[in-house]
Image (tube, rainbow, N blue to C red):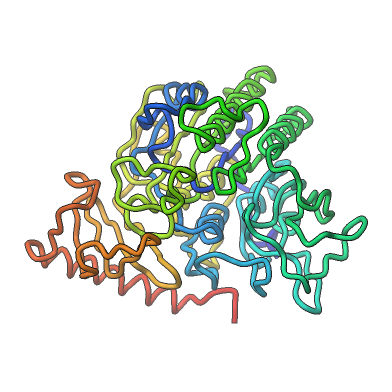
Amino acid sequence: MIAALLGAVALGGTPDPRPNIVVMFCDDAGYGDFGFTGHPTISTPNLDRMAREGMTFTNFYSGSPACTASRYALLTGRDPMRSGFSWVLSPSSPKGLHTEEITIADALKSQGYATAAYGKWHLGFPNERNDFNPDRLPLAHGFDEWVGLPYSNDMRPPKWQPIPLISGPGNGSDPRFEGYKVLAWNPDQSKLTKLYTERAKSFMKAHKDEPFFVYMPYAMPHIPLYPGAEFEGGSRRGKYGDVIEEIDWSAGQVMKTLKELDLDDRTLVVFTSDNGPWIIKGDKGGSSGLFRDGKGSTWEGGMRVPGVAWWPGKIAPMQKVMQPAGVLDLLPTAMDLAGVERPTDRTLDGMSLVPIFEGGSLPERQFVLNGPGQLHALRYGSLKLHVRTSSQTGKKYFEGRVPLLFDLNDDPSEEWDLSKRQPEDVNRLQQMIDAHKAQVKAEGTFWD
């Protein structure tokens, strides 16, 4: 079905080969957790170099302030509300990524790309009480290889959950998969970042003569924090800093490997995070920088995340992009770069970033920000309208009053409500919200 929906097109006669694509995706890393975004004690020299040699996005958005929905948005280029689930799946959830969805891996595989995922999946687990359904894991969604955890590193499967494809009995702890096979129960999480990095390097070396897509959704800095032995105790920011610095090492290994393979000028590398930091975890959580709140909220700290694009020779160095963009744009970007036609049977909410990579810009557009099961806010241009608010901290900012309107160019910390002074803008953005909700309802989802 997927192959029938995706059509190949010529790349305009260009002699350059189709580029490789690598996406590095942190779990719960905040905007303020890196050297290139201003953290004073976490050392990230490799990511700082990636930012210096490439492009940083200062207004880059995740697809959701929660794990599952943000991964859906990245891989499908669609508002998570279109999926039938819009927050976090538990290991016992009956839902998962539907096989009718088109992922980046599906799109690129249709063009002959080798595809691999190394890290956290969290888009469905293959078990129900009486049915094993492997369609929920990465190999059913365009990936040739996958090694990683099926959900967050603090989750455990329910006792009733059967897993037929394992060698030996399980102990009820978090499994580490390779493809459809459990490699280890309760794996040593301090070895995960290194494992994912080494597997990614091996995959790139094995497929250096063909285009490839590597997706690296790290297990951390989601808690519990498990830095590798070589990084534990090395950061002045404590264990959280240790974990970020190991991810920085991983980024350096990716860049070094591409350089050694003479593929750096043929590879787009994107670095970002699935949502903002888990600020209620104290020193075990990260920093939103100057933005309000964090993970679980649609305040800027929950959804504005670090964004870097690196492609030597194609993306000019030292570029700072202030135009809003986000993970929803990665699928359309990959399609453009690989020469894949857009599907005509569904809405893609993202836009291709290729014009920005080439020094241009994108049309002004809206960004929908969803909380648990409902649309909470919308950004258009520099204006952001909240129609619902929430926070894991329990705080009721502005006494819980809505609507709230902010100009994020003047007020990125969302301190000064403009709703009473600019009622026409409130009405205009509210109309955009209503239109979006009606369109999502009319299009429907892949779920009954």
